[in-house]
Length: 158
Image (cartoon, rainbow, N blue to C red; front, side, top):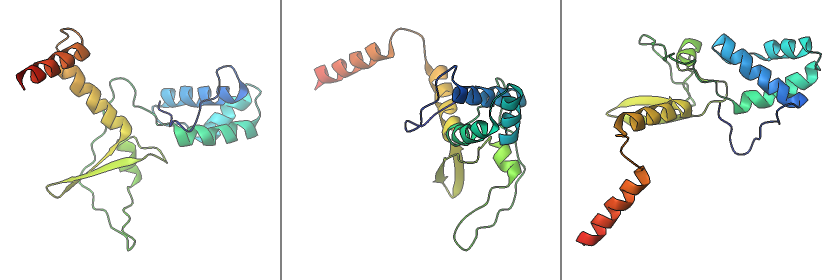
């Protein structure tokens, strides 16, 4: 789970922290972002105040992007026609948002190449980057040492 620098996660073992823990736990169990009422009910079963749960859920929901379960991949969605509104907005239907595993306040990066629009969440971008690094890592020493050696070689030539 990722948190922007402006929001700090409540400490473990605190009442507010427990709401976040329950939201994380339920999300992992459900394979999707937990809903407010589900978290409130779980917290109430433990004797917690539902108002605290509701407030903390709001903070958790704004700052948390639920990653897919291990081994899960994004779902495919067949070609779907979308309309551009007068204000230039495009509404992504629920099935597309679900397939991309997007939360309510997820920020997307848009890229257009050869007239094709690609939308990607930061979680997906990080996942792709990790895969790229893993696939190109030879496991032969430190990447930093390799970079320093390359720079020294370049400087000695010039």
